[in-house]
Structures are given as structure tokens and as C-alpha cells.
Length: 184
Image 1 (cartoon, helix red, strand yellow):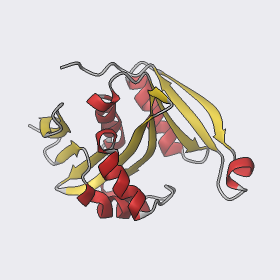
Image 2 (cartoon, rainbow, N blue to C red):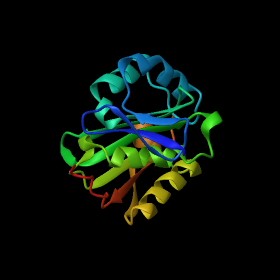
Image 3 (cartoon, rainbow, N blue to C red):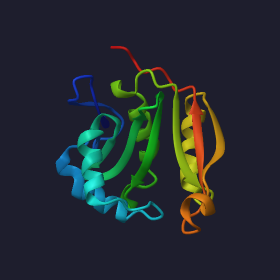
Image 4 (cartoon, rainbow, N blue to C red):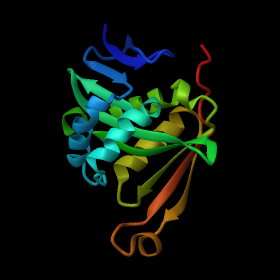
């Protein structure tokens, strides 16, 4: 039987049915260099500094997801609860290595994130996506549909006003309501 790994409320890895070589878990600080390399290998994602990725792996580990395929990091979601709006979980980046594309890994990681104890009580998932990123739009549209939620879209950061013409406009996708996380 195939297995997928996730974390229980104590934060330890657990396995459930789906694929023998896939483990979904929280990151550790030691994952920082591999996360930095994965993001760099996944254009059009904006590269972060290695230090930023290290902080995400340590300070935001409860709301980030690492996917290991055959013991190698092949997927990453960075996310955080907004301090000013704790009912929202913001997904900063979703990265899937080219070797793991087509496995539904992005959707599995989003589902894992939504089920995390650290996300409990959040009613809305938000992210920003450029218009020219059909893979991300498809990923988040599928997540909304799978969970019976609505995806709405609005401009968040515009090319000229926020990026001085150096980056495409980022559109905010808001998905609500989020599925209720289990209480066990």
C-alpha cells in the first residue's frame, strides 16, 4: 500500500495511504539550503535570501510544508498566519521540483497545510499570483473546488505602484471558507 506522510498534533511525522516514497512534514532549520536550491530551480518563483528561507524553516515551521520524495526534498510551501488578520493563512510560495511534477504534490501540500493545527481557526487562505502563472492559478482553483470553497481575485500589488515597473502585478486569490481542521 502506498503512503503519504504528515504530522500529528505533536509535530511528529505520521504516515497515511497514498504513495510509498512521499513524506509531508514541517521543515527544520537544516532544510534551509535545500529549500533555497529548490526555489532557485523553480522559476518564475522569486528567489529569497538563504536567511529568509532559514527563518521560514525555523520560525514559521508550523505553517510551512516540506515534501520529501525518495528521501529528497521535492516540494515546499511557505505560509504564515497574518498577525493583523489571524483568520487568514497566507501562502507565500509553492515550489515543486521538476522531477516531482505531475504527482499532484502541490495540492497534497496545500491539503496538508489546511489540516495543520497551526491553521485551525483560519477561515480564508490567501496568496498572490501573477496573471502569467497558469500553473498556480490551476493549483489554487483546484484546491478551492476540492474543498467546496470560493476563489475570488483582486489586485494586490501593481506593477507600477508597488514594483516600479520591475515585476508583474500580483493578484490576490482568496479562498473561503477553508475546511475545518480536525479537532483531535
